[in-house]
Amino acid sequence: MAKHRILVVDDEMDILELLKYNLEKEGYHVYTAATGEVAVDLATEKMPDLVVLDLMLPGIDGMEVCRILNRDPRTMDIPIIMLTARTEDVDIVTGLELGAQDYVTKPFSPKVLIARIRAIFRRDQKPERGTEEEKIRIHDMVINATRREVRVQDEPVDLTATEFEILYFLASHPGWVYSRDRIITAIKGEDYPVTERSIDVQIVGLRRKLGDAGDVIETVRGVGYRFKE
Image 1 (spheres, rainbow, N blue to C red):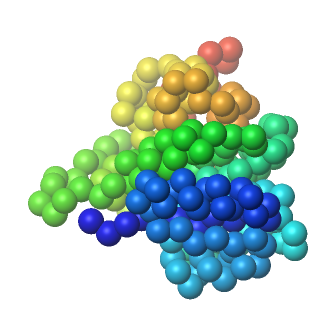
Image 2 (cartoon, one colour):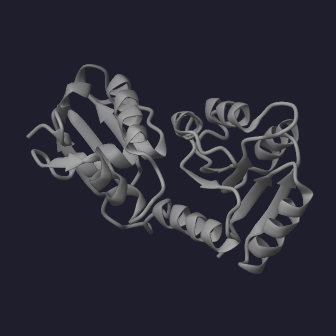
Image 3 (tube, rainbow, N blue to C red):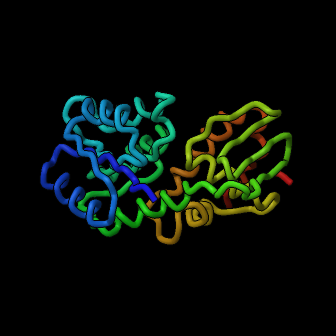
């Protein structure tokens, strides 16, 4: 099996060297960049399987890099893990809204980051040829878990990875009410450090992208969300 290729972006050389050493020890092929401009060039040239992206960069910052990569059809499907020294909800939520799949706050353990990377690669594994596609058909909507695609009245809907996970989880249990915390646990795992507010933001974006079909996701006041039966 070919090695996964990872682009690590950080302006601190000691962090770049630390991550390069630990990731290569795990068998990954690693590219490094110290500025946002170089990161964008490398991402489009090398097409890595994942980007580890610091938010505080000279020149264009990590948020702008995330925005650029997610607007480019060539790089929009590359998962991004944000590295941030910021702990404010607004920064984390903004990064997730721009399409990042995950984040790790500084200072961090390389082991924790590697575990997050492995989790993303496991989620993104494609089934072998001949495997039956797993689909949910409900409310004029087709959610294809195998291809990670959503269609409403046969029109494709472009979702971020997190938006897809939320939609698929809720649609898998129509009529059931789930708290924000339960949704976080279902899509990210136990003790995942993300705020409940970020789920609200993701739901708003999800409803907007689904258009008229967005009302299938109902808010249950004081509890959480459910998918209409």
